[in-house]
Length: 344
Image (cartoon, rainbow, N blue to C red; front, side, top):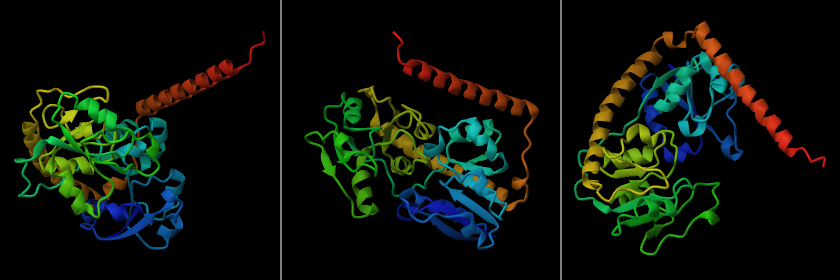
C-alpha cells in the first residue's frame, strides 16, 4: 500500500505527527507532503497528490473542503483534524463529510462527529513510560510554566497557587507566533525566567526537574506536552477543557481549576504525581490495543463503504440546521433594529 500524508510544515520541526507515521508504515510506504499555506507558503493541491498513484491519502490537522477532496483520484481518504482547530464546528459543517472516515484524538470531537452522522475512530494517545522515569524525588514546590498565549498567564498562575507561599516557578516567557507580547505581565520577582532552549533535550532537562507542569493552553489537539509531563510523574495543572479534561480527573491524577479559582492548600502533590504516571502506564496499554484495531480497519475494504443515515437522523439534523439559521436571522434583525437611527 502506498500512502500519502498531508501535514502542516511546522510539524517538520516539532515531529508531533511522527508517531502516527509509524502506525501508517505498518501498512506500507509513506510519502509526506508538507503544506506551508499557514504562512502563505506552498500549498498541497489535488493535482500534486494525483500526480502519483496512492492507495490511501491521510490529512493530518489539515482539513480540506469537501469539494477539494472530491477532486482526488484516490477514494480511500482518512481525515485527522484536531479539537483545538475544529472544536467549535456545528453539525451543519460536519454533515457534508459523512462520506469520509475520521480518526479523533479527542473523545469530545469524536462524539461531535458521530452525532453528525460522520464515521469516526477514537484513538486516545498515551506515550510510553521509560523504566527510569520515576516521580520520586521531584520538587513539588516548583512548577514549569511555558506561557504560550493568554489562556493561562502570570496572573492566572499566581491566583491558582496563592495558597502556597513557598511555591516557585520556572517561567518560559515565549508566546506563540501571532500573540501580542505587550499584553504579557512581567515575571514576578523570584521566578526563574528563560526565553529560549537550544534543543528539546535542554527544554526537558529544565521542565522535568519541576514536580508540577502548568498546561499553558485552554484547548489542545492531543496534548503531547502535558502527557510527557504525566509520564515522568509530574502533576499537571490546567483549565478544565478538552483534551486535558479527557486525561485528568481533578484531585485523582492532576488538578483542573478554572482561571478565577485557587488550588486547595491540602493538595497531596506526591500522590497525584504517582497517580499521573500510573494513568499513563495503563493508558498506554489501551492505546496500543486501539492501534491494532485501527491498522486492521485500514487494511480492510469495509471502512470506505458509504454511510447511510436513517430518516430520523436526517430530520434531526435538518431541524437543528433550520434552528441555527433562524437564530442567525434573528441576530441580524436585532442588529439592524439597534443600529437604526432615531427618528425623534
